[in-house]
Length: 235
Image 1 (cartoon, rainbow, N blue to C red):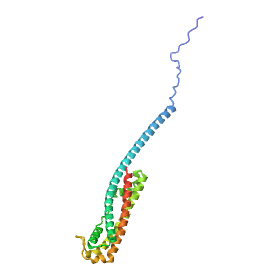
Image 2 (tube, helix red, strand yellow):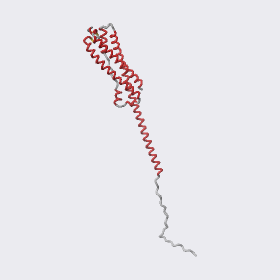
Image 3 (cartoon, rainbow, N blue to C red):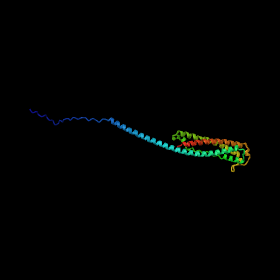
């Protein structure tokens, strides 16, 4: 027996099986790697920037330190030259006064020259602009050398001794001038009244000048020694 074909229904379509597509998930591993990479780039960039800035700051500080050191060297060199000249003058005046006080043949000519030389005193002019700039600007650390900073402080402190000597000595010389001016001709460096020689005040004033000259010589020697040591320390 022949089986009859199954009845065909054109309206009916075979249902196709549809598989649902899965949505792509977040790849956490890839994302994490990307974030770490980005963070690494940022860190490296910031580190390089800080390093470059640090190099620039160090370079600027070294340049500034060299500038200050050069200026200090120039100031100290001027001080050494000036202090040396004044010291020679003070020692010469001290020798003249001492010789006169020790001499038994004290004449009008020798006294006139001694007094004229003593009254012709040279004063010290400070060269401390660079040091004052460093102190007032709190920039001593710029030099980067504690030993150098210590020497600078010690050296410029010697200015005080020189200033004190000049103040006291100048006051004494004014009094000496007031006393001897009626008896001496400064132009010819001669005593016009021999009575000046025998007066006690004359010898007293010269002894005061001698003592003050001792202080001045000591103050200038100390300053000169420290200036030379500082000059040797400056690079």
